[in-house]
Image 1 (cartoon, rainbow, N blue to C red):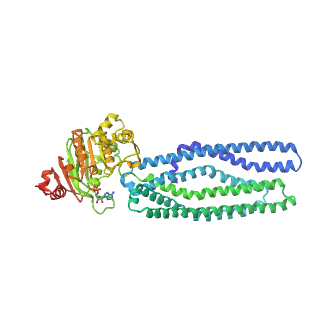
Image 2 (tube, rainbow, N blue to C red):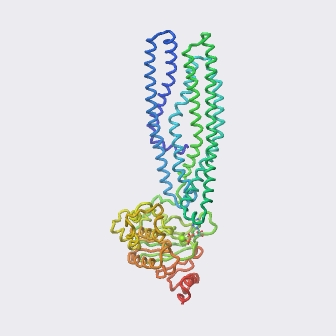
Image 3 (cartoon, rainbow, N blue to C red):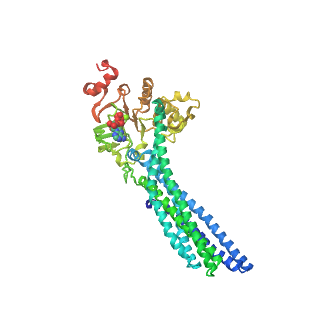
Length: 575
Ligand code: ADP
Ligand code: MG
């Protein structure tokens, strides 16, 4: 909670204003019963109409001031709480955007979403309530006690008897509710995760007839959340009547004892009426504090979850002073690079060294899991190597600013990711300043022009979320066009040709060759035909480079490569 306080700083003035207004409102409420007592005892009982009118007028003024203050206080409190929520969400989003893949997978997408939405709302509510109640309630409680004692010290003993009971009841409820709130937030996470998995994998779920299974999984998570929520609410619900009974019993006690005292002439009717109002004021004040105290633990849990995200340092950060790169040519160099995923037993890459130059194509081939994607991820600095160095244009990528580095790289990931928007928007994503002509050209090179033209609205066709209204190959070609429109110095294609048929693959590579004449091209592929004409081919096997050279050289020297070629093109290709 404390760690989120800094987000309240910009709202100091509004908070002060709201607190002052709330205090004003509380004072008015404390003052009103005394005025009423005066009307009853000195006006009604003695038949003094002038007094009734005078004090009545004053009462109206005080009440109006109190109401006005209450309205204004609500306004400022709501503004502050919502502004606070917005600021925290913005900061969370900013922080999460900077996370590397590692922090992402460590925390998990589902909980990051819950924390940015639901948890912020919890804390925001407490900020609002605290501003409304935390300052006014103690004042009302203490003020109420003082006024009650002034009104009738003897009757004040009733309050002394009831308040400890009240506090005991509140503590009992709060201490049981606290652990339940923690569980509640975790269960929201679980539900969120199940729904996400179901929605993103809906086709697989259907294809494998697992709908029932997923339903059961969802039902279980849903029921679990519901039951916990019901238990918490039952507890909170039970506490309300208990408190009301306490309140009403103390009023009964005050009336009983007070009636005797009025009879005996120790106190007056008006004072007794005022006293009853003070008792309610005090009890409501305690109630308000307890409400804040009860939701405070829940908000504290949420605040802790938010702070955890805010305190997670992105594993990949810009250097304090980025080293300038003299000339962006696009030379990529791996120097004895090893990489091990955190928690993995085996390194995913070991001792990789190579150099990729402008105007040349470097291909990477190897079986699944041999480390191809890992290698290109190191180049765009999604991870940092455990050992060795990755240099771009002679400077270690860790010494460059990430934005600067990536500006010159056109990266096509293995999994085609599209965003909701039009096809044009998706290609332009690679380069905001691209003209329509440039976008069309990029699409043409990526062999996407034909199918785009055949779509009902051409480039303005809407892409559904995740690109589900396009085929895998079409999606892949759009991501290629997105990289091309960027006109980068370095192209990185991570296995993105595998989803294309042979003919499109060949046509695309031919068009690309013309376009990328002076750029550095790094192609990851499974098919020998895709890469056999590359200037150098790196053969990966179990994270090691078992061969580097041209197609012909490797055929002679690298048994792993020979095997791949034979399995795909047959014995005669080797001969
Ligand atoms: P390729 O692209 O050649 O199919 P990858 O580079 O994706 O292979 O993976 C290389 C190895 O690293 C595999 O053994 C895989 O299990 C492991 N690996 C990949 N990603 C992760 C990750 N995020 N965490 C842990 N291990 C990973
Ligand atoms: Mg891969």
